[in-house]
Length: 206
Image (cartoon, rainbow, N blue to C red; front, top):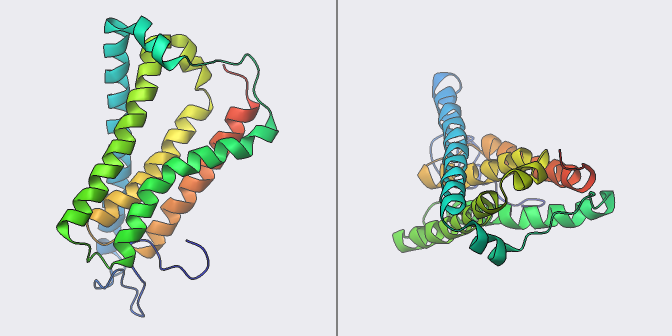
């Protein structure tokens, strides 16, 4: 997505259209499009939080000892320091790259990706999301308040960044996504994940 790479959701033509679709006019239609994108952002965050809580409750009630043995999470008493922020941010961006790459594929193909191709993208992305929700949720269930303290203050910021990236894919998958919205969400994802990395590297657990 550097240089002259076409915007997410498809190439922006001279009329302002994305992916070959008619341009979204100013006013109410544009506001409705923005509202739908915002709704997907809120919905994705809500679903992920609910899923995390559900996994945590099940693990805490059923198999906390087994989960601790399998996860073997380490909780350093002191933050790693600013020097570790870059490595943490790269790890964060790798995860966010999955939905962004999927959206870019749809955009470059002008949403001409055949049904099986779109379904494969959905399955891969769902697998990435589910795997991470299970691991993090199991961590909450196994370690309880200790895990919660360790994920603050960076955890909510990191989650917001991932949800921005996921919303880019969901909005592209559902239909047209204005170039401005796509780039704004992508930029927000990168900035939030960078901020989360700095917080994780420099702030002691609360």
